[in-house]
Image (tube, rainbow, N blue to C red; front, side, top):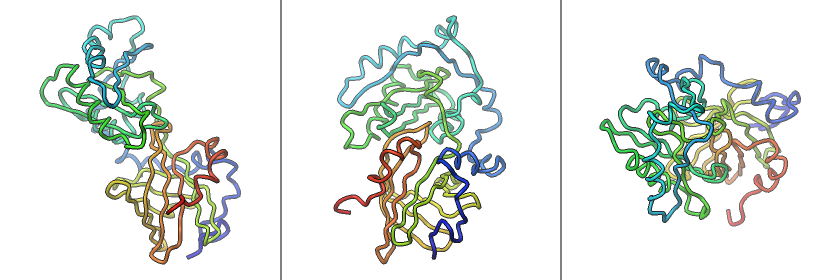
Length: 291
């Protein structure tokens, strides 16, 4: 197995930045349509957008009284009639259409709420609550926030959660519902002399596909908790842990450290912005102390 930028993966010399690679190596529409679509009937849904949406949020240890109060006031029938309100098709809200939690929310019937970690850049957590029965908005919001807070990493004391959508109301600014169709990835395999720029795309099976300009090279398969497996087309398999950092354009950015059975190490950064990698890639690719 050779992991070389001049080897069987092909040269990446045409790439001047991670953003460029993401733009020129995305899955064709026919390959990602199943993964990124919801039932056709649901595309008729509309959501209410507001210039100044209500903030329904909580932190660990909160009694949820403020979140419940704001949720009670967040009546879509009232807010939808405001001058600043806009009713839009769900196709214009990328995070709801593109992400797994968003699609779960959209395809839920009855009462529904979607919560996400806040601040999103450093708080990777999501929760979807759905009930076929009509739930009071305060109860719906509290359930979503409780589940989201329970999903927060224990080492993030400054994190909380916020409701981003409830029933047919979006409770965050439109910009917060951005979603990247592909994520940048940086792969390092020191024993092979590899330091490559790639693209990570959603896999219909629930993992991620790593691609260069010539096609798929590996699959990232999440396991229980932080466990992860990276399996290359050559048959090489690395197993290790994934450290979720936070959301970037709707996707979770994460650092992965894994080894083969003979101890060969791999470091993989997925979903970070180019300026972050320019500043931090060297430190993040280095194997964690004690690892």
